[in-house]
Length: 262
Image 1 (cartoon, rainbow, N blue to C red):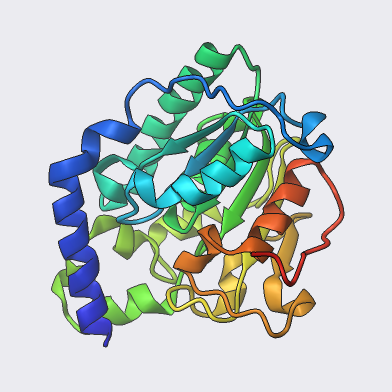
Image 2 (cartoon, one colour):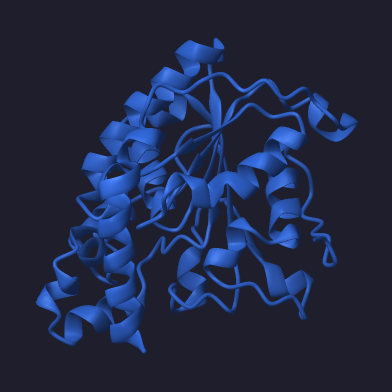
């Protein structure tokens, strides 16, 4: 099963590179949706950048971006360069440029970040190593292997070209030099408000606890509040309950997931 999943990810990534690399890295166009709920009106000043994960094409993140826009946020989607197959610090430097584009286009001093999977590592590297804490107000990660994942280790162990030749996969392996550097010292630098969201059904982040960070972050396990909620790794960007946690984090609210949200 793991071999088939790996082959599928690489096949999708290759196809996406040929068809959609230009879309997400273009200069962002200002969002035009007006606030539709009082809940978001007070927080809509910060644009929100949705950061994709490994092999995640921009269109896959439209559902969560659409929810954000419906709540009054100016939402943008950032597709990782090369679909995130390459070096994570290099992707973080490209992300830094994109953040500046969004700030220039919107006139906002700071942005908020909602990042899925590898996108959470790219964003956190930007915050910790590239001075991003000055331009980000809130950081929310969805199923990010903050301390690595055994899945990446297993792929390497099977001899598939050392993570099938995918640099980011190597860097997301537990014990990698990249993660040792990223997690050295304070996990939550600056005045940024950090929230991580994880699910026990995450097929790609194992152990699940590795999706949390230390040093004052709000770490939310969906099933701790909603035991019957089934949410997979990709489902974190589609699930209604997960979105209610994201929405609360963006207004610095308490953790109150809506367990029946669609």
